[in-house]
Length: 288
Ligand code: SAM
Image (cartoon, rainbow, N blue to C red; front, top):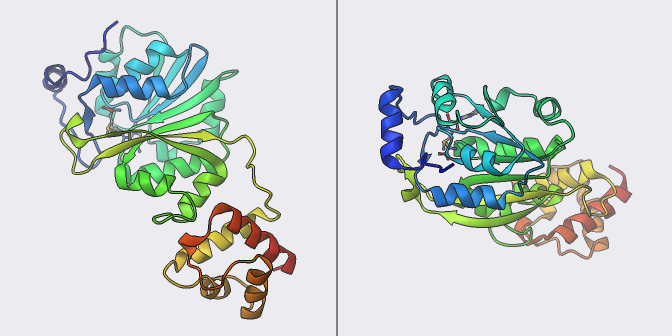
C-alpha cells in the first residue's frame, strides 16, 4: 500500500470531495511530505507488537505510516468533519480505530488501558502547538503506562523543553521533562512541509519514558516546589525566590545553599539537575 495522503493534489481533491476547509484554530496544517510522516513513524519505536495512540490524525497521513508497521492505531481527532474523511482515506486498514474526541477532555490512563491490553504503547502527535506542552506534561505527570511520546513541536518550544537544566534557555518544564523522561531531538521540519504553510518551523522530539526517575530525591514535592520557585523569578539570584516563594526563612535558605555547596548568587538557569537534587535534599533535612 502506498501513502498518497501527503500529495497536494490528493489533499485538494479530498477537501473538495468532503467540502472541507482547514481550521486555523484547530491548528490544521497538513503534512505534504511523505518522507516526514515515514521518518516520524520509523523513529517512534513502533513495531508489529506495539499499539499507537495518535493524537490529531488530520486526514491520516501519519496514521497511514503508523498502521503499516504497528499492531493497532487508535486516533483521537476533535474535528467531526474529519471523521468521514478518515473513514475514506484509511479504509484499507483493519487495525485503525478513530475516536471523535478532544484529547484535553479524555481520561488518558483509561483509554490506554481499554484500547491496548497487553500491548506496549507509544504516543504520536502533531497537534496545535498551544496544547502540546500541556498534553506532554499530562502523560508524564499522570504516569500513563506508555513507552514513549513522539511529538511535532514548534521549534522554539522544542528547544526549551529539551534544554539541559543548567544551560541557557532552560525552564522549570525542562527540569520536569528530564525528571520523567529522556528527550531526544529526532529532526527539524521547515514550515514549507505543511499546507497551509504555518508561521513557524517545527521539530520532532521523542520522549522516552523513564520507568523510575534515576535521581536520589528525598522529597519529590519539595524538589518541584524549589524548581518552580527559582524559575518563577529566574532573573534574580536564587537566594531570593528560595525564601519568598517557599516557607523557608532567609537564614535557612543561606544555610541550605552553603550545605549544598551552591552559591546564593546563581540564577535558576545555572542549576543543573545534580544541584537541584542536592539543594532539595539539604532543604528537606531542614524540614519545611
Ligand atoms: N497529523 C496530521 C498531519 O500531520 O498532517 C494533522 C496535523 S494538524 C497540525 C493537527 C490535527 O489535530 C488536526 O487534525 C486537528 O483537527 C487536530 N486537533 C486539534 N486539537 C485537537 C484536540 N484537542 N484533540 C484532538 N485532536 C485535535
